Image (tube, rainbow, N blue to C red; front, side, top):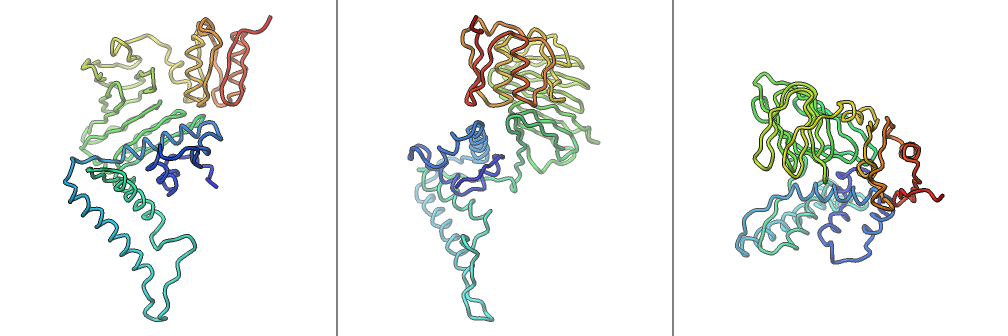
Length: 349
């Protein structure tokens, strides 16, 4: 029976998950497919684990088939050698060393790495892939739906992750060198200055942020991307080549026209850090997107015009039931949570 995993890294330590990943599309109705569909949010957890796994795969240029076969042979020769070593006869007792139940002689961590490597070698044709894990220099911090997390980076900078968010960075930061972070979701950074004034870079799908020492909030979600500067200064480089210098209080949003400044209330942007949602005549369709990002449940509006209804008020965001009751009270609409989705519709008169 599969465990109730809560973190992407936990999934990557499960041999059966790695095997499922390597053979996706070949099996229908597998145990992992059933596991994903049992509880809301698990599909997103698996997506994060797959993204993490694929982000640690470095694809090299195509190599001759003979070289690939030699590499594969060397890999399995190493596995066989480790297995033999684990079962080597004890020099004092003359007995074969016993293995713990369910073990192969390889440590659990090394075991799944070899299985993953072997699976990948078997699937690929004419390419070599090297798997890099956290111990080789990658660190990943992530949150589930409804979770808030505060962490410190290697340089002492602090980052607060909102729900359903993730950042990754290298472990080998050193003073004077660039400090780079890749992120998805929403996060608030308090960047620490270094003696050598080393640069701090935040990468998102739509823009990059160049920092020296400051406090700012970043959102990088499907259909929504923005940055609000609370303190200090940053330079935002858009993927369209546009560049903006920001001063405290600035709010820059990515849209169809690229990077653009907007006027917003600072409290409305940062309320999530205190587990609150700040709405000021916010269209219900935007509220629906926030709920989906925060809790991983699909929100369906019975008809398009309902999305133009507005919500005003400060609502707690760490209690879904309380949030839905507040939306119902603010809009006078019927809100139904089926467990699989949230339906919002006009009440029956």
